[in-house]
Image (cartoon, rainbow, N blue to C red; front, side, top):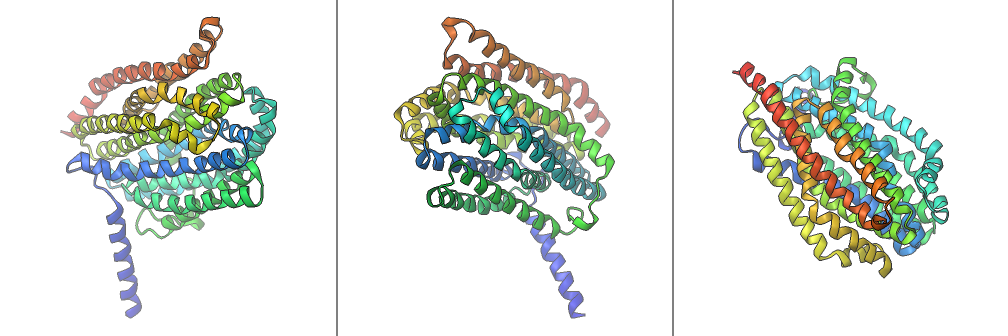
Length: 471
């Protein structure tokens, strides 16, 4: 009897804990709930950036400019090779959110099990891909000879952490679907502190250079993945993951891929255009590479302050679509746009104001800092356009239209940037790194306008039918 009461008490405590972390996205005021959702996502993304920032800062300070360029210049390539599978986690978020909105427990359970197994398969595939093709791709990106060896070593070791990285991303997507954005933040905070300590130890005391920061990153990714798996395995109800019983449900997999593959392709296209741009930047030499890499790392802090509201609009839109509350979808879009623009402007002004000091964290070279400041002034002051573009795409994905924003991004970001860079750089008057940087705001403005037109079409031809059906 005492044992039974103890088990009942434990179950009630677990359910109360789950309710404490969950957010009801289908009723009440949207703004405070969106902030409650988005701020932990923002901090989580910033901590993920700190993984890379810690790598770049440590090698920049203790290993030299070539090591800094080797680590920093890999970010666009890593994004290119991982974004397709990270995009699948967006499919997980949309599907589980939709099941939460419609209160489909069986659907949630199947989606959770399928998502974690997909994460494992994706991670193993990426590891093989990265290890086999790392050097060849870096050569195609015109990586300078003095940087190539270090960049290859960093990339190969980094890709051994792909499986835990995928597990953390998919597990976090499951938790975000219920509104739980705080526990992923806690888990990443623990992993982040481990990463920083190991970075310093491996580079300063063991003199492992870029290999040290890569090993530290892999270890920290394993920690964050283990904590997410532990969390899901201790949940009660449909979100509980039992690894011994985990199976891939083909129907859930198909739904995840329908949303996730286009979202992932968008990420790949983004990264492909960035690889083209990085190749152009590489042609201007190691100093420009290092300054651009440091600036890019700082810019990402502003980007993720806006991207958190993209994540929020996906979950809020998906749950309200599942609950049949179409009118709240419009309010979600309005709130997401306001929050994203405010975040982009506020954090952008801070970065521009303190750009010299921030770049000085990464390197003591005045030449590198000057290059970084030049890039920051062009990109950060127009970054709000990127936030607008992301939120519009997020709402359409939450509605269930993922192919449309991907097609728009293909034309507005990837194709446009490639044409811009390859075309203008061939003209002597425009052959400068400034021309490369200007491709960013130009593509954001174009893509946002196209996303807006697509949403108005979806509103007229799709959401109006949902509204009539719900009525």
